[in-house]
Image (cartoon, rainbow, N blue to C red):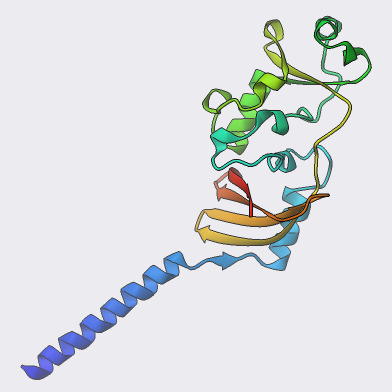
Length: 200
């Protein structure tokens, strides 16, 4: 009887140990290799000044709804000269610089599609932060910015850790800025969704 009890205690101890080990495995983080970090620096970010993944790092947000749309779409969607003569004339009435500077145009549909692809939410689901900094022409359902510069910044990912099986946190530096930032991505079948972007 005593041997049987002792055996049961040993088996119980082993089972408890296995449960703890498995639980620990589920929580263990996985650090990205140098090759994976290099891929993020050359294939996911950077590569060209119209890489919209870089633009998703242009503001800080704790959740997708908080993203600053003005900073995100400051450079448009990488297409220029999409405005008609009538649109330019209307913009000139709103801003006298429209005749001399670049005009950025993004339709509501383009914004919505991009946000759904990269953040998993539509335009209506955002807090619309920064949207009122654009000119809006209702007849074209489009947002415009008259500008002579860009807010695009190159970035350099220095490390990455899988916090969960589908959640990756990258620590990176920005061109011409001090300090580091952390962007969290969620892996999906199609790629990655941006979850948050904060100063480290």
